[in-house]
Length: 126
Image (cartoon, rainbow, N blue to C red; front, side, top):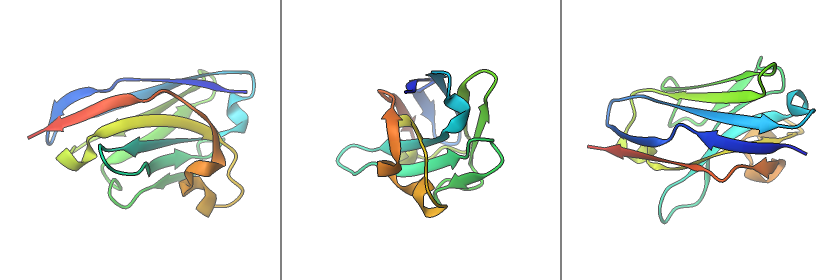
C-alpha cells in the first residue's frame, strides 16, 4: 500500500518553470515505479514521465522530452518532476502514481499504476 500526495502546482507564464513533488508513504516505496500523468480539460489522461524503482531508468512522453525531468529519492520517499520551458498545452491536472510495470511499454500505461494522488493543477498562461 502506497499513499501519494502531490504538491507544487500553480500558475506560471509560458516559458517558465515549475517543480512538482510527490510524497509517498509506506514501507515499500522503493519497490514501486513512479509516474506522472496529466489531464487537460476535456481530454483524456495522458502519460508524462516515469521512473523505475531505482531511479536508473526514466521514460518520457515525446511532448515533454528535453523539457521535463523526473527523479526520485528513495531515502525520502519522494518523486519530483522538474518542468522547464512550459507551454500552454502543458496545462492540466498532474497526478502522481505508483505501480509495478511488467515491461517497458507498461510504464506508459495508466492501468499499470495502482496508487494515485489527488492531483495538482498546473496552469500555463500566455
